[in-house]
Amino acid sequence: MNHVEIFNLLIQLFILLIVGRLMAEVARRVNLPPLVGEIVAGILLGQTVFGMISPGAFEWLFPKEGDSALILDGFVHVAVVLLLFIAGLEVELSMVIQQRKQAFLTSTLGLVLPFAFGFAIPYVFADTFDFGEPDKTLLFAMFMGTSLSITALPVIARILMDMNLLRSKFGMLIISSAMINDLNGWLIFTLVLSMMGQGDEALGLWQTIGLTLGFAIFMLTLGKAMLNRLLPWINKHLAWPGGIITVTIALCFLGAAITERIGIHAIFGAFIVGVAFGDSEHFSDKAKEIIHQFINNIFSPLFFVSIGLHVNFIENFNLWIVLIVLVLAFSGKILGAGLGAYFGGFTKRQSLAIGFGMNARGAMEIILGLIALNVGLINAEVFVALVIMALITSITSGPFMKLFLNEKKTKTLT
Picture 1 (cartoon, rainbow, N blue to C red):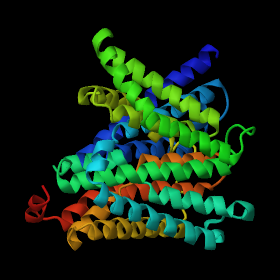
Picture 2 (cartoon, rainbow, N blue to C red):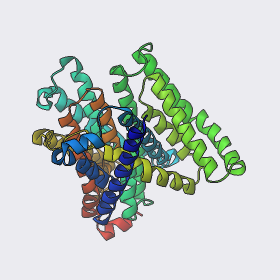
Picture 3 (cartoon, rainbow, N blue to C red):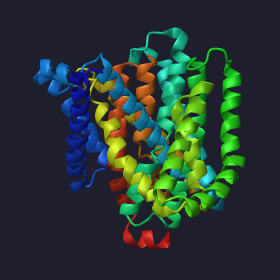
């Protein structure tokens, strides 16, 4: 890189972080998730606003080619890996076991119905989504089903914390159901990626799936046991918190590298390593908080702001596709998770509240959408619809939960 490209890269990072932070603060002040503000910051900085007002300045600041563009793309990829790592840290397998019956019903129906809705409509009406590749229609429908069935665990956790319900029976059920939901959802996405032929062509589909499942099982059993032995040594002999941060992030990158080499996207490996760390009794809440702050305030804005840089949200806004995706997302998740909770013994109003709690989407769907967009599985209109769906479900989840839970009913759940 020459000095001009280095200057350009540093200015890009400065603007992305500052504008992302400013808009995240605006979102926070109006009780919206920070990622909403960060995505809006990207829309303002990207082709939708800045690129329309001053195309020349936009092309100079955010060139599509060159070393600065390549390195910025590398930063974004690292940010995605780290985001999935901290999502995995939120998973507590012991909590899932404690509520296994109700969580199983809620998560299973909360996964199966959204997947069925998200698969069937795009498969039958692929032309409506402007998807004109018959040989990839099955993959497209599987992707849509997967993206509409996965929840947003970090967003759900934050909403429940704000409502003082995270440690209640109600909150525990939503969190544990979301954990199972996301684990199964990522396994399905693993299959989709394998069928797309991403990764090492020397490995066949079933070899890739077998190696991926083997890695996941190893990390959640023997790998977790090894971490339980390693973490006390780290806490005792290495400087705190530097030692624990270095080792956890390094192992996150190692897990991501392994699944990337197998032929599955690096984010799956990062997520599984995060689950293994997060479920360890020797990984303190304080250490989790430090890592969360480090990633959420530096790398998270880089990813969410970058979403709007290369997609024009006005030109690629298709009202019909947006409405279809929203209807499928709301109906599938609320009906599925709500029925699961009702069969598990909750009242109708409580079940609806749980359904809306599980309906919150966020980083996961956007990350899946960006991967699919980059490999040509979806077009920009579908990607924009998925981003809008993630924003609207995240914004509406909390208010609808409050609507179905008054103070008296909330106390009965604690």
